[in-house]
Length: 138
Image 1 (cartoon, helix red, strand yellow):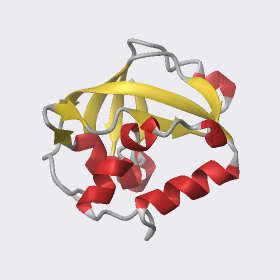
Image 2 (cartoon, one colour):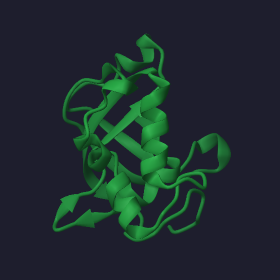
Image 3 (spheres, helix red, strand yellow):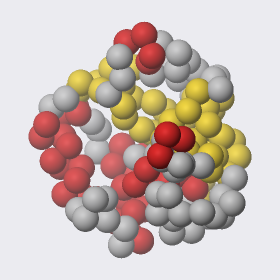
Image 4 (tube, helix red, strand yellow):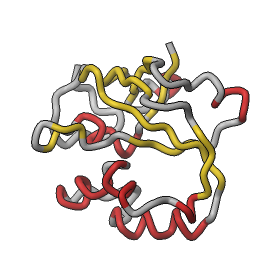
């Protein structure tokens, strides 16, 4: 099974707000051959960080569409929420010491071409709540 490491957005991946998944989108700098494996309907393991760095699986997600390329400068405003950043902002969770909005604006300004991966969470394998990468919760 494929793996995506969510690192600093793991808490958002595990969160639920009014019965809905908080994080439903992620963006990745992948090579084209690797990205082609991420097709609609594929189940993917969600990890808190890479297994190479003693990460652990925290969720199973299902892709709702094929991964596709997009410039970060074109990221729609609605994806601030889909990336889990609005929820993180409300929780007071920073990303590498940055406010989520500041992180988002700097990311957009970079104008990088990245793959967009849209998904739904099928199963949470760790407790919902504020969760930092590498915490042992299982």
